[in-house]
Length: 455
Image (cartoon, rainbow, N blue to C red; front, side, top):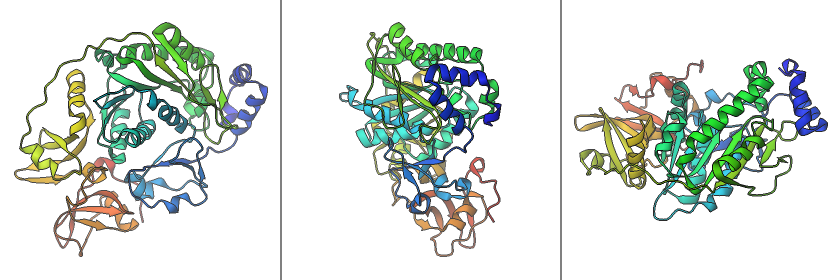
């Protein structure tokens, strides 16, 4: 792929980063990309088989660079949300986010965070784990993706990760401006020219030009300006791209501070291999094992309004009482047609405020379809980290059986009780079947079915 990278690009990198760094990047683009994962600290899974020969990611306590690339599609624990495949450089955004959490001034309510350009979900799942580690259940993370097809992928990945405090939306950034001063932190991993992804994205290589860089920078400013009113005064913005040039990186970070009203913050000195720029941090293949990534943090100094719709929560009903038996935490339930959805009580009001301003693509945890007095459990309930292990009988299955389930094959579980059974593989829930004795009804969603041959 690197043979297609233009000399004009390398001239641009040389001018901004120096000849030595540009030559190291040129050499790195001839090498295969590294493979890294970030494990889910809130799922009790044995991942020792995956970690053999792995190296720690210095800026991510849960990140590992693998010695070789496995076939993730054929690993049930990948589908169960026990880990997420994410580039090690992209994990650095999560570290800057964690460093900034101590600056959030929140009293008596959940922390409110927006992941503005979130698909496919790597940064969202990293942030969800960090927020839960720091604040317990007392947070809401809004994960937004404006492209609806990508938002559906995002919603699936959020469901697999299993944190019910994440809400998925698919709206233009300017919609969030209706929630003036509402968010304590916004992470804006904005669409960019993709210079840092040349090893993985041939389209980014083909589309690169100085004009495209300028177009991306202008679009990034519009995106940030549109969402800026929703950030509270004193709130934190983490701005990131996967590109190298100053125009989209420090140039835009400086513009945000000067034009929108913010003060740049550098949480710590750069780790080995990470370059410090005027406003933030830059990661370049050849200096770090991963791909290209830029990240800067800033605190909003301009004033922010506090215009937020007033909403009232509905009184608890039968749906709420039914849902409570399936969770280890207090939940508020509502019906979407015949589908019951449960939200943690602690964020029910925040979710209602969001829902009054924009449609929610996904929120909380889908519990299941209500049929009369019975409930057909949804797979998301099996994946949820707050699902009670006493809610359903459980059957531990081996990898082969788990893959057959994920392939939507017919299963027979002669030792399991009849009725709905939660399947567990490697100590992690993967889904439900209805055991009829001589066979099982496979409840794995058709849209998540493994298409690869599993024989």
